Length: 343
Ligand SMILES: NC(=O)c1ccc[n+]([C@@H]2O[C@H](COP(=O)([O-])OP(=O)(O)OC[C@H]3O[C@@H](n4cnc5c(N)ncnc54)[C@H](OP(=O)(O)O)[C@@H]3O)[C@@H](O)[C@H]2O)c1
Image 1 (cartoon, helix red, strand yellow):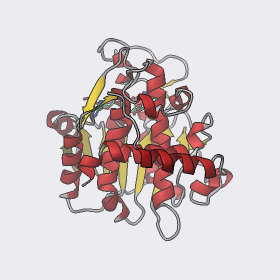
Image 2 (cartoon, rainbow, N blue to C red):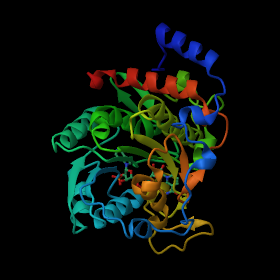
Image 3 (cartoon, helix red, strand yellow):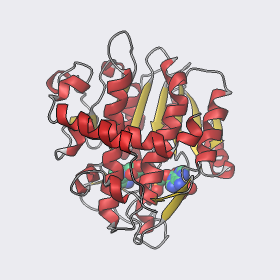
Image 4 (cartoon, rainbow, N blue to C red):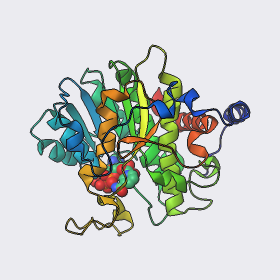
C-alpha cells in the first residue's frame, strides 16, 4: 500500500514550504554558526578509545542501538570503559547480553527490533523503568542497500525496510524517550547518518512512495533513510534546542568503515575479519570515533543541528539536508505512521 498524506498534513506541509524555502543554517542550528563550532584535533585515524581517553563518564547513562556489531559495539565498549552506564540495544536479548557481557563495566542489555514498533515501544519502556535521565541516545543501528525491495508492515501500512530500520524505528524510540533525554542536564541525541545522504532521490524524501512499490533502487533508498537521519536531527533542534535548554541533536558520518554493513550486498555473508582495509577505509574503532566524540565532548555543549565527520563539523551535501520544511514534514509524517504507539 502506498502511504498518502491526509489533507491537513498536505496543507501544513505546503504552507511550511512556502515560508521556509532556504533559511540560513544558523536559524535551526541553535544560533551557533557553522564557523563557530569548536574544532577538535582528532581526525580520520582517531579511534573511539582515543576520544574517550581522559574522560570520566561515571554517572552518564547512554543508550546505543545496534550494540552488538561494528560501530555500535565499539561505541558501547569505549563509552563503558570510560565509566558510562551503557544500555546496549540489539535485536535479540542474546545479542545484547553477549555484547554487554564482553565489557567489564556497567551495562544493561535491552531488546530493540526496529522493524517492530511494539519492540521499540517496549525498549523505551525498559529504558524508562531504569528511572534515570538519559544523557545520550545514540541512534546507530542500520542496514544498507538491500538488493531487492523489502517491506515492513507498520500498523497496516507497507513501508520500505531501510526507511523503517534506519529512520522510523529511531523516530519512535526518540519520541518515546525524549522526556528522559530532556531530564538530563545536557541530553544529546546522536544519530549515525552517512555521506550517503547525498544519494537520496530527487525531492529528498519520496512521501508518495515510502512503500517502494512505485520504484526501488537500493542506494537511493539507503540515501533517503540517511537523509531522514539528518532531517530528524534538524527538527529535534528546531523543537527542543536553544533558549534555556541544553539539549542538543547532531548527526554523524563515520566514513567508509570495515564493518558488517555490506552483508546485504554480500548476500548475507559477514565481512571477512582478515580482509585488508581498502584505501580510505577505517577500522571500526576509527569509524566509531565521531559518534562517540559528538556524544561526550564538552566542547559541543549547545551545538545542535549539525553534521560531523572525522570528529569535526562538516557541511551536508545537496539542498535537502538543510531544508526545514522537509524536516518538519518528515517529522509529521513519521508521527502519523507511528501514531498508534505515541499514545
Ligand atoms: N560501515 C560504514 O562504512 C558506514 C558508513 C556510513 C554510515 N554507517 C552507518 O553506521 C551505522 C552502524 O553500521 P555498522 O557499519 O556498524 O554496521 P553493522 O556492523 O552491520 O551493524 C549494524 C547494527 O544494526 C543492527 N540492526 C540491523 N537491523 C536492525 C533492526 N531491524 N533492528 C535493530 N537493529 C538492527 C545490527 O544488528 P544485527 O547484527 O542483529 O543485524 C547491528 O547491530 C548504520 O546506521 C550505518 O548506516 C556505516
